[in-house]
Image: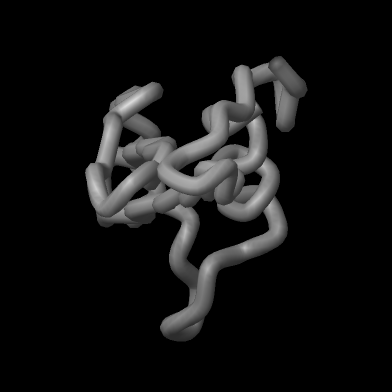
Length: 77
């Protein structure tokens, strides 16, 4: 079994490799990271992590400040 980003890679039907998909939901107060494996038409959740980050406090002039970007990266790492 191969490893992809530290997660095992399986093969689906007919030896077709399973695909990994990631989703980052950056909200005003929280950040959610979800990782799924799709194999044989099935979606298998592997990771679901949610953390309060208070990102809205880092918005300046309608855009996320450098400090806000750094905070989001810190939460996701």
